[in-house]
Image (cartoon, rainbow, N blue to C red; front, top):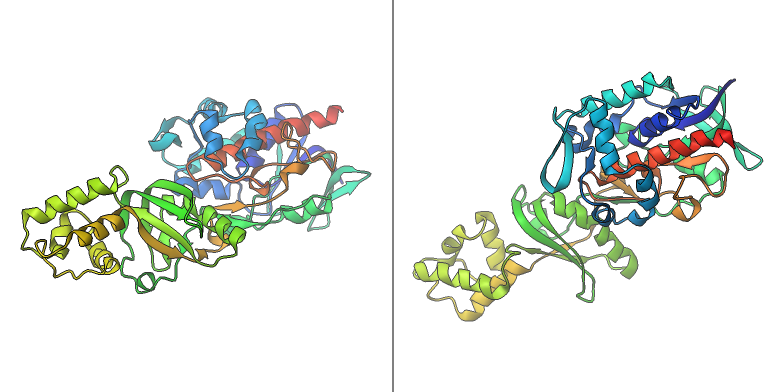
Length: 422
């Protein structure tokens, strides 16, 4: 039986950072992971380039973490996005800022980030055990006593940090292992659901693949509730797929689609695409009129080619109830208005999302009412800490989730180390 001050379960971004924070404070730390390699999810993040954080101001960071982002204010006091940047640069990982504040390694290689983190963990004397699934976190008299490995080996410690992630991208080892250990300590788990996930539609034109593979740049996607009230809008890029919608703004809207379904009990939710977000409908109609006036004898399906992606035109005209053979001269004012209205609000009826396993991020997790935001310690079990995606915190892609993981990991590791002095 081995004795440690802190045992950290999970070698992802939050677990690696927790190991570093605990070891820097002199704790005897064990990092245990069920996989053969540490940082697997980190290694594929950001398209394999690893978006390590986002440089936005704290208030903006919180705004981009719609799943309980406000809980992170205390953690950011300990270790925020600027601390993350300084941390990596001190490790020799030069960073660069890209669009929307995203920070990437200059090398464009996630492997360099993972290697730097693991090297730092090793340099601090953290013992690492891989290929060793944890079977149980051991509790007694209201506090942590250690862990039991699946091999039958018991390891004792006064503090344990659960950094096992959620249930998204399970091929990286995130299979929800931490939830039962939290429940055994008396915690509740809020409903788990996929976020940052592609959207599914049963529209006939979607199923027929009419627009499959078509990308739209700089458009606005909006989610509406059954009463016609706007729930959320996101502007950016998207793509039509064989099952529905994907791309950055579709992923961001996905959690709000599910919220509408859960709150209203409806199966079908209306989304809409604004193809000209910088113009109002009257201005769009004016542009359309200008195109038609240039060649009034040309069929409108051809006149629209310079204004819209060609593959979108037949669907748009069908929704407007117009024939593509109609010439600009023949098109009545009501027809122009119908087209302009669709360009500003093209409806797409959707019916859900892809599965949790296909999501980038897990929504739901360990109930934050049961966690001390200043330390990440359980309010129910002394010496038990949580960090990363196992918590009920989720943000948009773009460096926000990993910022939350590093911040909560650092906070948990720091205070777990201090536990031994109590």
